[in-house]
Length: 159
Image 1 (cartoon, rainbow, N blue to C red):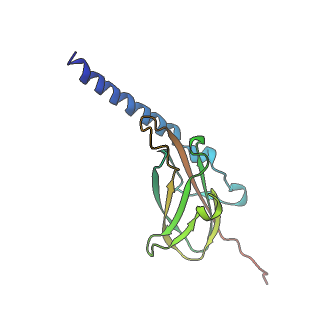
Image 2 (image 1 turned 135 degrees about the horizontal axis):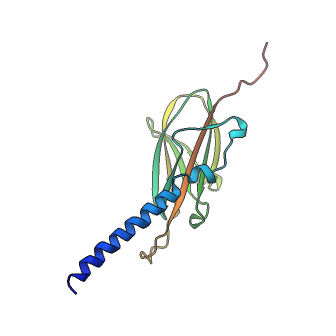
Image 3 (image 1 turned 180 degrees about the horizontal axis):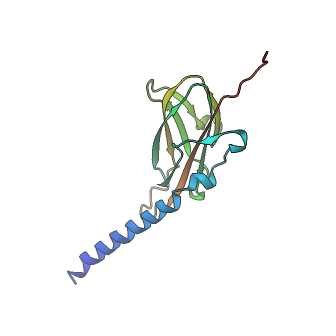
């Protein structure tokens, strides 16, 4: 019986690793299939677009360079377990200035803007916290971050 306990512990660990790996694989292309794209408006996905397997109360950070003279569309999509309430913050990494935070817009998950300077930014995504009284069940879901860009179209009159 003493030998059986370590075997069960190792077996359980391998099963959990398989479950975690399976969810991560399911989430790999989540941003491509669940985020609203603006491709019809001339936007193209950037290499920074990514998907995550996340649990409630967890956060992820992505560093992105926004370029002067480009328009950007940033979209976040999440599995139903998060209730479409993923917190997003964009912060200039050099000045630590918060450029955007979606709590002021009722957790808006779509953002369009024009960059008037080139800067490196950190995009922080955080899922809502789960119930703290039951730590045995902490489901994992997918969160996708789609970042699209286009050259800012000229405006005004031309000669």
